[in-house]
Length: 493
Image (cartoon, rainbow, N blue to C red):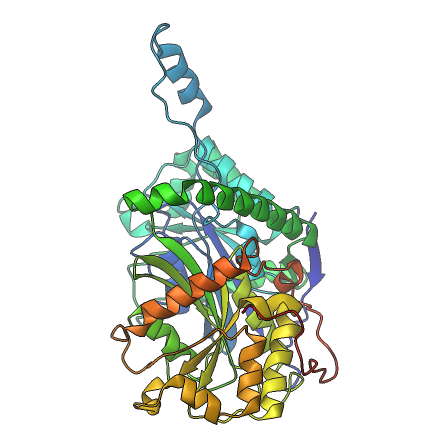
C-alpha cells in the first residue's frame, strides 16, 4: 500500500515560494505525454521529437502557483496472449520456431516510481495521457492498470485521463462521444479515474483564447479538494524492492559485460556508458564543464542552477550521461539549504544504478582554504557516505587561466590544503578549458582517467544510490560536522 500524507501546501515558511502543485504524467508510446508536459509548462522544456527514456522535471508558475511537471518514459504495452496462441497454432509441427526470445528487463528503463520520486513528497495529480488517434483496447487498459499498480495502492483517487490529439477528431465530435464510441476499455479507465478527464490540443500555442491549461488546473484543484488536500506518496517498501531489483539487474549486466568485453573490443561493440555527477559550491562553473564534456551547450551557464538537469551525448565513442546540480555553500554544510542538499542526492538518483564518478568542480583561479576543503568533504561524506571518496575526482575549471603553466605546478603552488583534497580523491584530477565546448582535446583524456578510476575500483565500479536519497526526509547532521583531516584507506594510488 502507498502512504498518503496530508498536504500542507502553504509554501515556504518564509514566504519565498508560492504554493506548489505537483503533476506526474504517465502514458503509452506515442501518446503525446511530452507535448502535454510542454503545453502545461508553456515552453519546449522537454524534447518531444525523441522517445523519453528517463524521467525529467520541469517547473513553471501558473496564476501565482508553482507547478512541477514530471515527464516519464512510456509504459510498456504487453503482447496480446491471443495473438501468441494463434501464432503457436500456426507453427508447422516439424519446423523450428523462428520467434525471437523476449529481451530481459532493461536497466535504462524506469518505472513510474522514479517519476514520483522526482516530485517530492509526492504528486497531487497523476495524469494518464491517452491519444484519441490511437486505439485503446483491453491490452492498453491492462498496461495502464499495471503502471498504476507499480506505484502501490490508492493511486486511482489521484488520477485523471488527459486526451491528446483532439484536433484530429471528426468535426462536430466531442470528447464525450469519442469515449462512448471507443469501447468498454476506455470507458473503464475514465470511470476508474472517477470520471475525471480533460481534452488537450497540443498544437495550440500561447494565445489569448487558449484556456485549456487553466481549465486543467481547475480540475486538478477540484480533485485535490475532493482528496481533502492530500497527495500521493510512494511506499518506501516499493522503492526498496525496485532498487533491489535494479541492483540485481546491474550485477547480471556487469557479469555479461565482462564475459563479452574482449569480443566487443575486437568487433567494435556498443559504446561504453559513463554516468557523471557534477558537484561543487556555487559559481564554480559546473554547467560550463558539463557543456565542455558533452561538446555542446546542454546546460544553461551564467545563472544559478535550481534543479538537477540530466543530459546525454556520445563523446569519444562513449555514451556520457551527466547530471548538473545546484551549488553548495562554501562555508558549511549547515548553511547549504536542505532543498539543495536533497537535490544533490536526487541528482545521483537520476544516474541509476549510480554514478561512476563524482566530479568535484574547482576553479583554478580560486584559493582553497582549510575551511573550504573541510566543507567540501563534509558535503560529500554527509550526502553520499564515506565510500564516496573512491568515486570522486577533482575537475579544475577555467583551465585557460593557467596559460602555459602545467596543472602540476599550479597544484604545488596551491598549498597543502589543495594537495590534501587531491589525496582524499586518490590523486585523481583533471583540468578543462570550459570556454570552448567540443574543442577541448583533453575531454577524451578525462574520460580515460574516469575509466582508469573505474578499473581501480574493481567490483565497486560505481557509487550505488541509497534508498534514503529517494525520500523527502534524508538524514543530515544538525550541526556543522566536518570530517577528520585524514581519510585513511581512501587513497587509490
